[in-house]
Amino acid sequence: MSTNPLFISIFLPLPTKQARTPRECSQQSDSYAPINASPERRRTWQNPPYSDADNAVNRKETTMAARPQAVATIKIDEPHVRVTEFRFAPGAETGWHRHEYDYVVVPLLDGKLQLEEPGGTSRVAELHLHQPYTRLAGVEHNVINANSFEYAFLEVEHLR
Image (cartoon, rainbow, N blue to C red; front, side, top):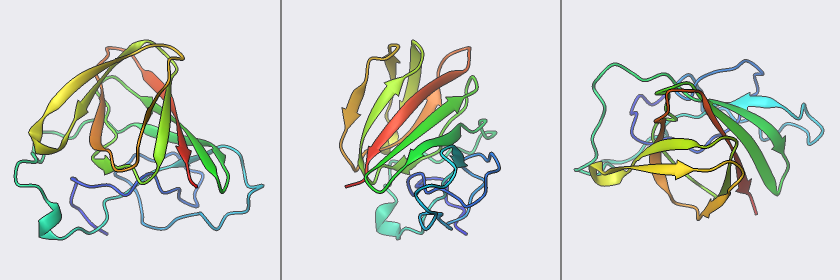
């Protein structure tokens, strides 16, 4: 199992129904689960091995105390689409990850998310209840709840 916190394979579901944080994970996937499996499963992700060429020189690796981790709960998992609810305690993060699929985010509350991006940059995005936005595959970032309250959104991944 890789211990490099910089890259995370995107939200691969685990066969367990136990709630886990993004850093408590395994590379095992439950993509073999039948389509009629439980419609609501929690999933987590893990960093895949990357070569030194993939580790950007300017990327900062957090050496401070770890932040709490966001909790991901799969709501729909079909061959063509996956819908996941992400819940963040104040200050919680997803951990670094790269999106393998095009996706849509639907905020469940008004709030702010801090986005740490490659090269050491960071920005705050203001999201509004039920105002979706879309991004293409390949986006790489760490998402952090910048609110003093729990924050949540739905992520819809287009798998085909």
